[in-house]
Length: 306
Image (cartoon, rainbow, N blue to C red; front, side, top):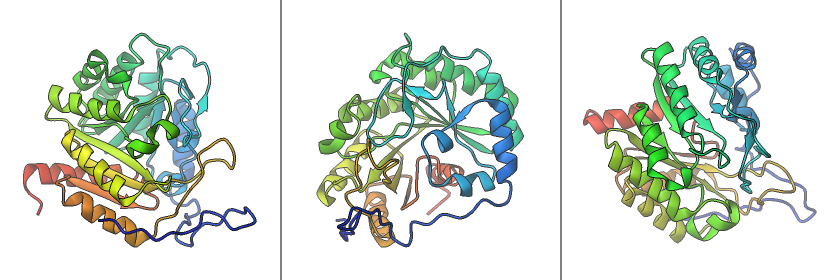
């Protein structure tokens, strides 16, 4: 059972206080090179659009998570900083520009996400698959992780993306069932679980993955139930990270900060259920150190890891 230490998200005067462990490094290494390659590609990144706290660390190591189908989302989730607005039509040359950027960064593993495109007949599944195909053709040896919206659990859309051949299919549950409608009103907890079930049914060889944010007001019992729900849906890999409010207004507030040792306890609880890999920590996000998480999962799947 996960035991929680309650840490206030703000002081009585309303000023934001962060625990000392929520500090990030300054830019170094290949940060400027990564920024240049990303800018030249013209492809959005979730690193920038979602205001990821790991941007400086990841870009300094030439890691970037690309966000295709534009930078405007048709959904308004109360945890996310991506702009909600009417999107532009998909850019026909985006797959080629994306593949060139992945090659320029020499990524051994790439995480490819997208805004929700409820405005398109196939919700963007065909374009997503073309982007996977372009990377596969241009970057031999690069493994591909896809992180799409739920496609309303439409089997034909999920099948299109599975058919493009990603090694890992990631769809985030984000939070516990009780908070799901509040945090992501246009999504559904059970529908997201169904997405993972469909992927595993259609393409058993594809590793499935999901992510949770904590600090939104969930309880230990709810977290444990959510871990079990994910395993029952065939989820192989789990990431757990601290929710951080992107802006002071317009986004769900942080209800609790979890201490590092609590993330360790959550990871132990999740691993006991049989996940291939669990990444749990204050700054863990779906794409954070994703290559290492994938490799651990693949080794365990092959039976070569304890």
